[in-house]
Image (cartoon, rainbow, N blue to C red; front, side):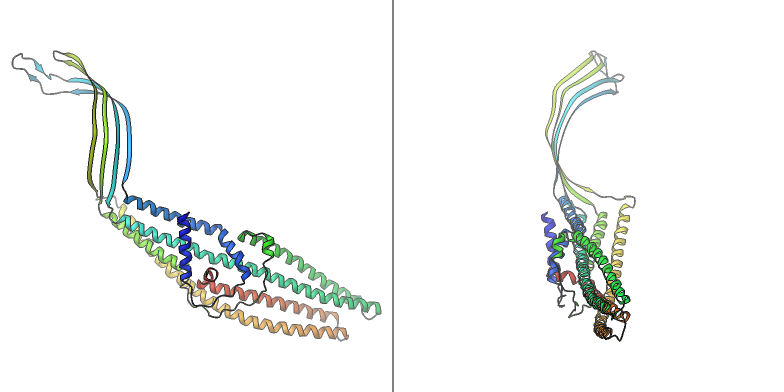
Amino acid sequence: MRVFIAGFFMCFSICLQSVSVFAQLPIEEELMKPIRSALEENRELSMKLLSAEKTEYEKESVKAKRLPQISASGAYGYLHSSVDVDLPTVTLPITGNQLFSGTGSSNLSSQVGYAGLTAKQVLFSGLQIPNGLKALEEKYKAESFMAEADKGDVIKDVILTFDQLMLLNEVEQLIHDSEKRLQKEQQKVIRGLENGLAIPYDRDKLTLAILELNEKQVELDGNRELLYSKLKQITHLSEEELKELVYELQVMEIQEIPYSVDSRLELKALEHSSKAFEYNLKKEEGGKLPLAFAFGSVNYLNFFDTRIHFKDLPVLGDKTVKNNHLRLAPNFFVGVGVKWDIFDGGNRRSKVNSAKLDLKINEQKTIETNEKLNLLLEKNRIDYFSSLKKIKVAEQQVKVAKNTVHLSNKRFEEGLSDITDFLAAENDLYKVKLNYYSQVLAQRSAAIDLYHTSGLLLNEITE
């Protein structure tokens, strides 16, 4: 766990160091709580950080190869063997007896006990261990950066989902305002009917328009419920807490436009991946060098209750020889060894070629990612400036539509136009206001995308 926390704060501090001089993105303070909660509870981020932690433990495992490897062993067994020996015949000079004539056979049985302690330590690994350690260190950094990079997607998702909720709030207000105006006119028409100054057609048209607004409200409530369900899942906050987070949907203007993707953590991750592949290549190339190691052991060996039965000995016939024990202890053995794979069937060459290809693939991936991010940044800049222009057009449309409704209302009251003209003007006002808030939502999305593509979005949250 300590390794996990250390890795998290290492990436956190690197992110802080990469903060650019760009002005802050005006993110509402109300969004900070759900964003931080989403970052803490996101399971995909947790899995990637755990993967980086696993790499850290792999590094510890490689470090252990530098240390002495000590093992203890013990054994007990029973030995039984038949032995046939044919030695050259020797004739005694005085008696003339022959020794070792023919084949001598015997049986051997014994109980055996063994205990030992063995130590082994690598003295020179062909630089495979240090290069392997450096490769894992760079891999850990790359995985940590990739985990941090995904936080930008989480932040963007939370902000845009809340923006959609705030858009629904604005739409709901439009529905209520429009319904209020229609009901006001409906009351006038009803009074006109009572006085013979209106016709049922006008009343029915107003009633139909109000029912259409009620239908839109039902659809809006369903969309809002779906958005809250999504936010509960990604932030792990209750619906009551989420409903308390309300802000005004406003244009999100950027004072200094980013023109570089150097802050993207994906590029930093690929940079460290490239270094990891370089060290891995050096490690594999080091396999052609010999491995030197030191070793030593101390052990205890005891043959006890041993019996050797000789058959057909000259003069003596069959004879059995016994012993209580034959003990060898302590036995010390120390030395230095070298292992050099002269020919391994081309296995080392295959690993070296594979490491070279991994390095080339990562280099091409880095170039491609950099090109795509720069193209995406250019697109997002264009979208951002276009969205600001569309906002200005939408504002003018709202002003014109408001004037149209006001004039239409006066003409309808004065009997200079019918209910159809009034409802058309009212419907146009609803549409242009909805378009305005939709453009605000699109503009905020363009601003978020621009900052996210440049890699500065995460800095705005963590700084």
